Image (cartoon, rainbow, N blue to C red):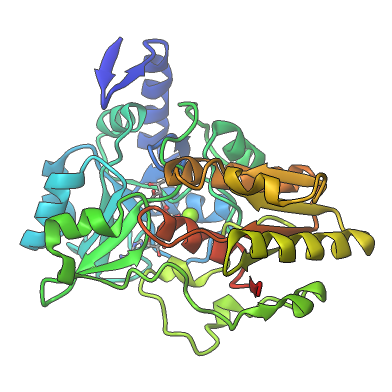
Length: 378
Ligand code: TXA
Ligand code: MG
């Protein structure tokens, strides 16, 4: 067995990886594990193959795809320039959950990959199966998360099949994804500062450690779609603000960030309180009322707060693990959102968490899953 990135690769995987690489070379689509979430890959130079990704996901064609490479030398073929700060970030965090948006070299990639932009997002995943697949495929691989558009991203091969069975060439099973949330997407600005287009597995502090504290911008975790709801309003399940329409909020720079995303099938609101106890009290009241009118209820919370809720506060209670371990919460978030679907939950509340470190990415995804609906407890 081979050791890469501290992970064991099963020799039995070798044949599956070779087969998947052949599929990619032949213009097919293959889902594969990465350290963040599962991706749905295709040869980024092949327009028909890339179109098959959009079709399988039901993805809007104006949302560009990330290109995955196994080797820094492949970068020169794809981009015209690598600013020094970008190179320093790659030195520090590749392979890893960091996507760098760079000026596109024309004529190599299918224009469908970049949705007509003059930039391309590139990343080198830190996963032995992904790296082996990319090396064997011998091509840049365009890969969005391997979920149906709008659904929570897949952190298990089974999630991929739930969403895409029959629509893709196959899936390589590498077990559970490690980080559980997508990569951080950054772009170096003309002044040398680093704009965070999407918070993710590499934290703002990690970026600042390389680029300098003052040079990291736009880390706001939660795009403010809407003013918070009074608890009373949340009882009426007011319609979500139309995130896709923009509603006066500034246009997000990562085009994908404007779409409602990661959402469970039921109604979801994020509960914020002056203390965990006040948030729990408000949430428990809302859940009881919702159940009273026939909703199937769900509650997403942190382990430490479980005791703040009455027994059976919701039909389906899911813990993200200890608040003290945002790594655990990141890893469990998408599977948790899918669990509410399995339970048939129609009214779901989620506790907010502090927007520091990985918490920024967790709150960003939660807020998007809730289409911006925040309930402020007193
Ligand atoms: O961790 C990840 O990044 C996963 C795994 C599979 O690598 N991939 C992923 O891809 O999350 P996707 O397609 O679900 O999200 C790509 C994000 C979108 O928000 C998209 O708008 C943004 O990256 N993006 C891609 N290319 C871009 C570009 N040239 N400029 C700005 N944003 C870009
Ligand atoms: Mg995605």
